[in-house]
Length: 211
Image (tube, rainbow, N blue to C red; front, side, top):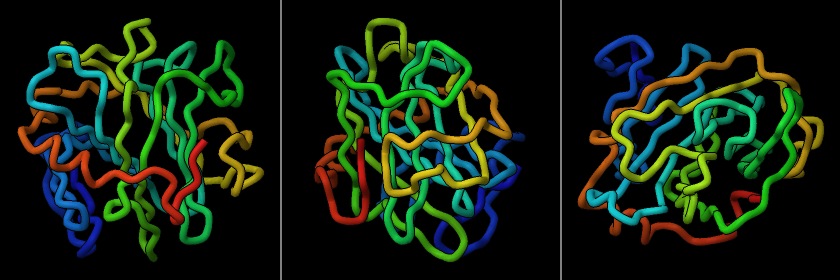
């Protein structure tokens, strides 16, 4: 498989088809273990070098066009912590979601929070990208992977159609047109630079809307 270079438009090789691999974003300088779907959806994780007691992560999610991209930090859809995002003009709209049914998931609330990383959040002519610090997003209630996991499954879903209310983080979304789960080698997501990267985050920047 090829990973689309988000800045130059060139193609860089990944190790195997739809297998996450380390990728350094040229705008933010953050290295993620990144998965890319053939549709253009991508999702990357960055974690602290020391997993003990950690509940935070840095993530990047994006896609092409005006549709939504989503991930499940617990692998499946039902009763797991989900993150959805989509572009709205030059801004990104995003929210936590959770559902017990196979339907548009409702906004989820809890101790978890997101803070945008401005130099990794943008919309251009080829794709959109939302990069954020996710605090207390690694839960101990079984709705996400665990801090000490080595190779958890992360779920993904997407639809090329925009949500019904693009400006509203709580908007309903159409049923996904592609979905699946990918095994992430978390050793490739860990970095001694995590604390440097997390300092890039600032809540409620003008270019994104978060729910």
